Amino acid sequence: MHPFPGVRADRTADTRPACAAIMVAVALVMTACSHGKDQTPTHHSLEASHTVLGVSQAMVAHREAPEIRRVPYPVSGPGDEAQNWGDLFLPAGDHREGSVPLVVLVHGGGWQAASGAQDMNEYAEDLTTRGVAVYNIEYRRVGSGGGWPETFTDVAAAVDHVPELLAQNSELSGSVELAGHSAGAQLALWAGTRRDTSSYPCANPPRIKPARIVALAGPLDMQTAARSGDAGLISVMGGVPSAFPKRYQAIDPILNTTPSVPVVAIHGSLDRTVPAEMSRKYIRRLDAVGGDGRLEILDRENHGSFLKPTSPAYDHVLNVMANF
Image (cartoon, rainbow, N blue to C red; front, side, top):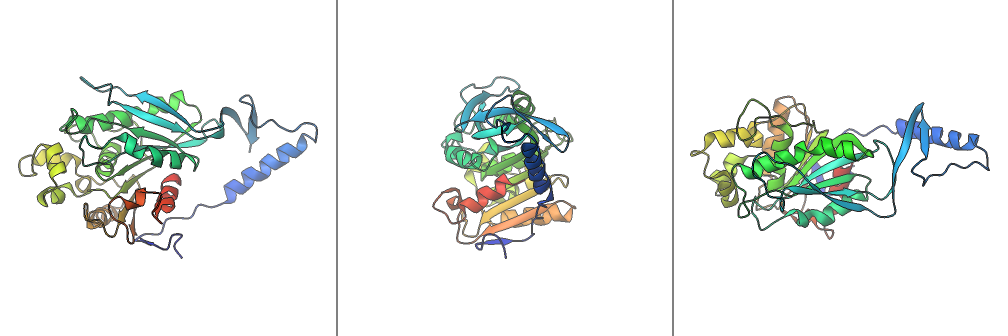
């Protein structure tokens, strides 16, 4: 039975073996016992360390509550310090070096200035309760200095700043997931899989290879969306596909599938803003080229309902995103 009964999965995800976790737990218990009753290890000291299976792991962070840090990222050319930043959400608790995975979160809103990173703050906070860090990025949008190509190059620059985040926060591991909702899903997929075969709009490949990309209700077939009259998409692209074919060719997810990066596409069955067929088509295309694609259709959910805590699918989607 699927772990969430309101979900239809076109591909069943592999279940992670529990053996490694059991071995680690046994090792920790044996280490603690060997100290005797009067030598209980201190778990809340930043100087503490654990030796697990012969590997010394230093405790590098302790927080009573989650922490949020504003992180500016550099861009090529003139930027906007009011928008070229990301908020780094760090989970509460004790954390050893290299133990916390990172989710790069890209908000949606039709590439328009009316929506911003603050719309995903609650979502980011709830992700941290599942033991991951979240880098919730802002970028210039149509109406706030964005459009072609700044919206896209901003997101690429934010993703390319991740190696600095990893270096500056030693609790973070090298396991990085990109995730986005709606327009943010398109941006996350492009930024995480862009190749140096195209000069539009950013020639360099990403500085990190994502462990996975999660696309939530994404317009993953941009040419079809534009031909169907998606005004927000047409405005950020500067026109329709026939006017700018190279632009669409460069960043349309369905035209740039990358087999080496797993993708999970999650979509509401009642979505009228971005039809679920967009995700179905993308996953079929990814599978056809030998990629690792997984599709989940959420019954009775629309374009954004599953992002709200009142949705019966809310916890399920967060759990999917936090386990990579």
